Length: 343
Image 1 (cartoon, rainbow, N blue to C red):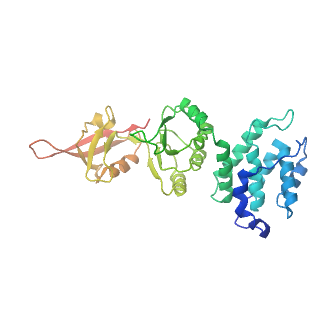
Image 2: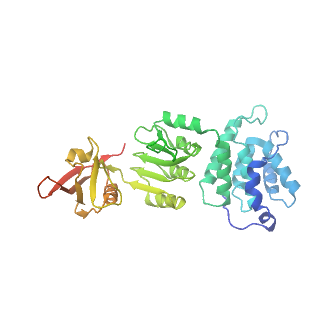
C-alpha cells in the first residue's frame, strides 16, 4: 500500500494549489462506457494520470471514468500515490462514482461501485491528516449534501436521540445521544458525518471500536464529545483529542452516580439528585457537600466527576459528606454508593 509523503515533482507542485478548487468544480467527462477493460489497460491509464502532458492526464481521467466499477480498486491505490496530481485525480474520479444511479452500461451495477468508492474515500478521510485526507473529506461532503434528513431518520429509528443543544430553543448546534436504546452497528455509525451542524456527540454505554472513533474524527466543528462506558482505549482517545484540540472530551469508565453540581466552583455541593439513582439510594441529598471519595479529597464537582469516571457500574465508593442542619453544627456523614451504568 502506498503512503503519501511530502515529496512532489516540480510538475505536480505547480498544480497543487488548484487541486482543491478543481475537485468539485469540474468533474471529468467520461468517454463512452468501456466494456471488459483489461487490468493492464487500467494500470496504464493510472500511470498516465501523472503524465507530463495535460492532454494525456485528461485522456486517462476520461478513460478511467468510463471504465466504471472495474477501475475502483486501482483508483483506491492511486489515491495514496506520493504524487499529489495522481492522488487528487484518483479521488476526483472516485467521487464521480458515488452516485448509485450513474449508468455504466447495461448489466453494470453502479450501486456496488458507489458503495466501494464511498468506503475508499472514508478510509482516506479517516487516515493521517494531510492533502489526501482533506480532498477525500471534501469529496464526501459534497456527495452527502442533502442527505441530512434521511440520515437523521435512520439514526432515530435505530435508537439515537436528537436535540438542538439549547434549553432556549436556539441554534447553538445539534446534539445526538446514543445510549442503551441503540440498535445499530458500525456501518450505521457512518451516517453521523451526514448530519448538518452536529456539534455534540454523547455516547453512553455503547461499546465502540477504532473504526467508529475514526468516523467521529471526520466530524466538522465538534465542540463536545462524551464517551461514557464505551471501552475506548486511552491511546485512541488521545488521537481523537489531537484532532479536536478545542473540543471538550469527557471520558468515563461507565459508572454513574446520578448527581449534579456547579463545575469548577468549590466546594463540591450537590445541586441535583436524580430520583432512583445510586446517589438517591445511598441517601445523598441536595445541599450535601462531598468532602472525599474513598479517602480522596474532592474539591469541586469536576473532581467528583473525574473520580466517578474512573469506576464502572457496580463499583462501590465510600462518600464522605457534610450536611447542614438548621441551628446545629453541620454533620459529617459517610455513605456507600453502588454505581449505576450509563444508559
